[in-house]
Length: 394
Ligand SMILES: Cc1cc2nc3c(=O)[nH]c(=O)nc-3n(C[C@H](O)[C@H](O)[C@H](O)COP(=O)(O)OP(=O)(O)OC[C@H]3O[C@@H](n4cnc5c(N)ncnc54)[C@H](O)[C@@H]3O)c2cc1C
Image 1: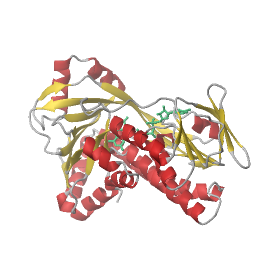
Image 2: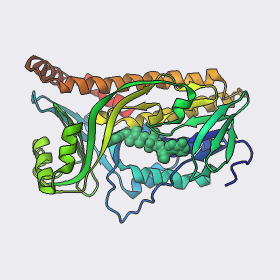
Image 3: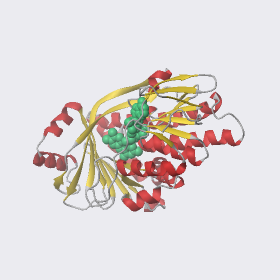
Image 4: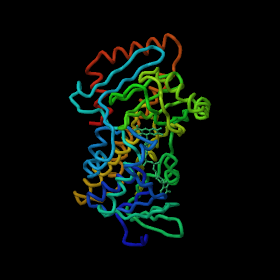
């Protein structure tokens, strides 16, 4: 593509799940969008087995994807709905049960392969009129009164009225805006693999909190489960180095054999975990969204869901300004998005952080208190309903 064509309304740096969804959503609302992504996503094939990276998608995300016209394609391809969730504490034995039916819902969410979602979003970009620069890298940018000038690789440049920074948790562009982050290194890694279990997963998500971190079993459509096992760094390295039989035993013990023995396990991958929150989401002609704005602990399975909520808010704020014939790049418009999403994301990120801290406590009186708290929540229908509605995002 010729990157020096007419100036687009919006340039998006980063075509991961969140940047691609944002490009599609803005283009469908009539914005002229250019998406710049360093790496083309790998194609998804139905005949391949489930990819290792999966996410639990909340109903609010499914709704947005439906509005973007991609949810049916994803659903028809391969998703695994889950209608129950059980969370239990290894130390106190207390548990929480969530059930979609008792909340008047068909499901609590869906387990979806990242690769499928990303591929489907990318397939829809062209028809929506999104211009793609791929492979392309935003190396630098400069804000001028009427535009933002981007320096791409290979000496190319591009100007746009607004830059959306969606280049992920290790964002280099966020640093160039001068926006700082706060957070902490969890000194933990999430070990992921798919496992076949002795007993069926019953379309339920299972999560056991151990003092070193939680282990989740998420249901896959072929009957296997995807594990996300959070472990302190050294422990994660030990688990990654185990032979297959030792790994299967370790997962069995860690999940308290809730689904029986682990019969089969795929190779493993792991991801370092950090809490990272941008102190602002907007500067002149630039906004942050997705992991570039917030990286959260995966214990609640919400990172991408928060990113998709950023997308919905940004598109709504920009469209509202444009429909009212106002400058959609005006700082007060960008700040409206920034204020709304930053406070919602911060509240969620800090709640997940607090949960991680509470479940890491080992002192017997605190464990007893935690057990009491969990049992009280489990006995309270209104409280559980609030938690389900909040996690669902609608
Ligand atoms: C173990 C684990 C489990 C998780 N489980 C869940 C879950 O159950 N539910 C959930 O909602 N979330 C979950 N998440 C979080 C979720 O995966 C992320 O929030 C989401 O993938 C972030 O997407 P993104 O598009 O913001 O960033 P990324 O996926 O990191 O995309 C950023 C993109 O930007 C591109 N890029 C970078 N720099 C440039 C540049 N300068 N120019 C152009 N392109 C650039 C990169 O190539 C990349 O494609 C989990 C995360 C982990 C680690």
